[in-house]
Length: 226
Image 1 (cartoon, rainbow, N blue to C red):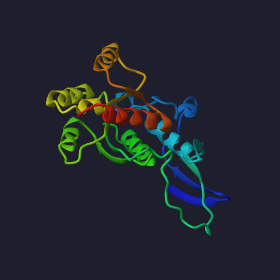
Image 2 (cartoon, helix red, strand yellow):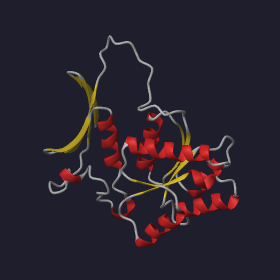
Image 3 (tube, rainbow, N blue to C red):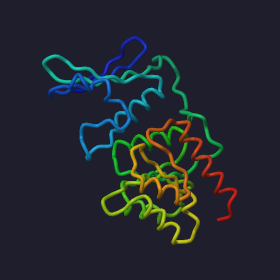
Image 4 (cartoon, rainbow, N blue to C red):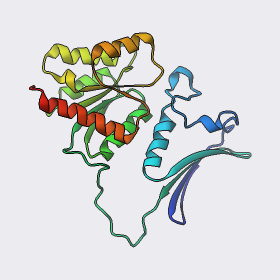
């Protein structure tokens, strides 16, 4: 069940299910980065990123059990006065120029959250869910100023494969790549990141961290002949 209402100066959205609820011993951890009950099928970042986006908009997100029904997820956001004139949306900490950004991430929820964050910074954003789709996107006209690529893409490819593809083509686009990864990585992946000599953005990250690393990569392209 989904319910939305206005309460004082806030908009409240509630999502309620009819399942067994959230076990009391983990209910305080559901918004922690990398906490998941899905095993290898989940990354534990979906709720963490969602909560971060809600907090960035001045709201809050929380969850509690409802006796006899299930769990209820609540999102509270500040509302605008009904009489207020609509304002033109302004990007948070506007950049010197809008960048064209490609986000390559296999986890749907995480990918959508990253897209929203980059758009909030005023960038033009495209996304891909895996290696093949990313390669197809990169063939499109116009190109990208920066690529945010997860180190784990699919069963057959990694972000390092995409970096190697870009380096082999010899057009300098490998210098636009930023790896994204969680804290839980293997020693082999850590070594590959070091050898790649590409910047790394650890998830979950803050909006300001994303802004800075995109500006850094864009600045490198301006300073380095293509």
